[in-house]
Image (cartoon, rainbow over all chains, first blue to last red; front, side):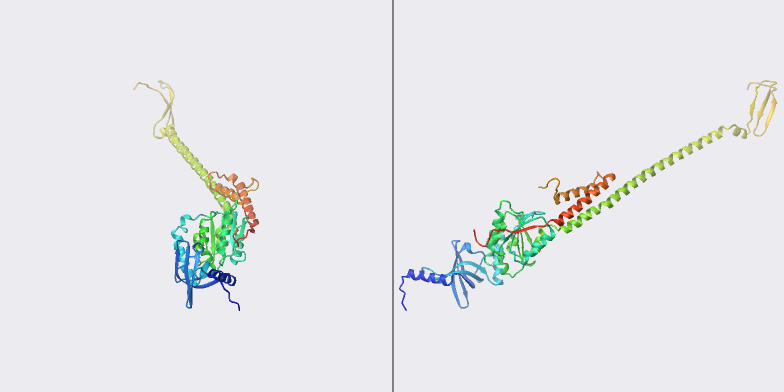
Length: 363
Length: 69
């Protein structure tokens, strides 16, 4: 077997070529130790387990989730021998591994973004009441997507729904969703709302929605966003950054459009209520007419009584003026001329007397 | 965006609401009530028909997002 004779540089280059050929991309899982960021650009840490430790290097912009010492992570990397003879992993992506690390990473990023105001309620915009053009970012194979489209169609129609087919889990998912968000935001006619949906899954499945760059892209979208990821109990940072958060994809459809069946019921009820209202108007009119008639009758009655009273009064006056009334009081009515020798007639209440005038004198 | 002869659901709903409000307003006249009621009934039927007929147009966009362009 021939012995290779190489310079140090050639040996390092050959080793790196061999490593790159043998392990173009590997995922290594371990616990983070000695984590540090130099000049805000270069990230160094060790990845260790009970049997060993390996140094890792990556650019700060590639670090999409916060990590710290003690967290369990899986790195996607290429092994490399540095010009100084140190073996390390050149890391392209890091994802927290295990529930504890996912939670820790979630909390760290949440605090950071919260401080920046990304989740502030005053940033939230209202969704259009009844959108006519919506964009959906999801995997068309996902159950959550099918639920969303079905419920959307059951509730409302006539909308243009453009769908961006993307991965909603895995290392590539955040970048695909970011590209889809940029695509819809850059269209000449932008949709009225962008909906990002994904059905339920494990914390690891849903971790794509806690990606820092994706969360920032959602927060800065010029089109209002609605995010419905996982089940009701799941909260992602994408949810918090969205203008409106839906508990599930189905709930997203409910929040997005009104229910046409409810509108039909309400419309029918609205029209049905008009008939009783007309009936009430007729009743009011009738009561008004009855009231007027009643007042007229009362007025006629008053007039009648007044006339009756006047008549009675006149009758009493007439009765007083009747000569018979005077005769009844003992007076007599004398007819004829008061001339001596003339015959006169004297009428009393019940007798008539004929008499002769014998004497006339002044009183 | 609607032509005068082809009002949208929103426009029809607004017209229906106007008609309903007329029944509660000062301009209400018993003589016109039947005509207004008939109009409201017709509009409600049209709104129901439109709502049930309209379907969404769901289309997957051609752009690919798996790789940076």
